[in-house]
Image (cartoon, rainbow, N blue to C red; front, side, top):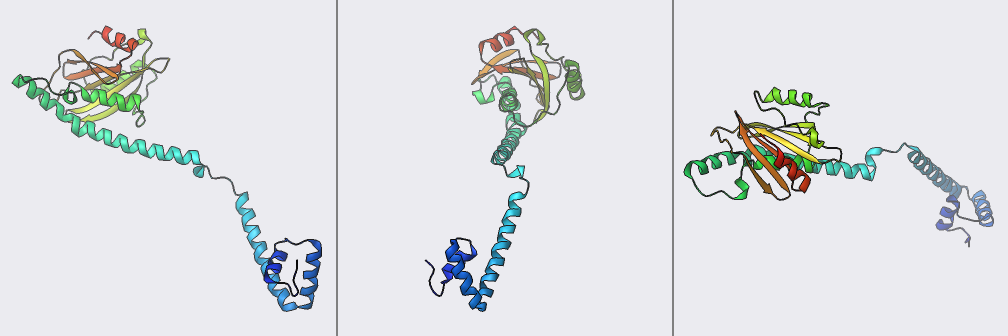
Length: 254
C-alpha cells in the first residue's frame, strides 16, 4: 500500500516497476505536485536504465572458452603433468644415473646383489611408466614408418643395434623421446599395436664405468624388462607383465 506522502521504499518500487497500475498513478500524481522529488526519482531512473544497459551488453558478449570449467580443469591437469614430468626427468638425469657406478662396484667387488632400486636398467622401467603408461609430455618425434624412427635413432646413437621388428606381433614404432642420464643421452622408442598396447625399446651408453650387461630379465611392479648390451650401448625392452606381452618379450632374440 502506498503511503501519503510516498516513502522512499515506495519510490524505489516505482523506479523498479514493482507497483501495480493504481499505485503507479498515485505516485505520478504526487510527483507532478512535487517537482523536487520528481527530479530525484528521475535521476534514480537514469541510473537504473544505465545499469540495465550494462548488464544487457555483458550478457550479449561472446562466451570465453578459456573460462569454461572443463577447460580450466584441463589446464590444471596439464600444469600438474608438466610439474611431475619435470620431477621425473630430474630423477632420470640425476638420481637413476648414479646406479651405473654402483652396479660396476658390485660387479668389481663381487658383493651381494643390490636392492631392487639399483637393479639393471631401472631408468628404462621408469621411462616406460612415465611416457608409455602415464603419458607425460608429448613425443619428441612421431614416425610414420619404421625406417623414419630408425633414422631418428641413428641420428643420436651411431652404430647402435637395429630397432627390434615386432610387426609379426602387431606392434609398430610410433614415437620417440630423447632423455638424459648420468651415463649420457638415452632414448625411448614406443611401440603400439592396434589395441593400444604399448612396449618400449630403451637405449643408452653404459656410462664412464662401461657397465655392460649380460642378457637378463626382471620385473618391477606391473612391468617386465628384458635387457642386454651390444657394442657401445645398453638396451632394454619393457612392457606390462600380462601374459601376451610376457610371451612376446621372452621370444625376442638379441
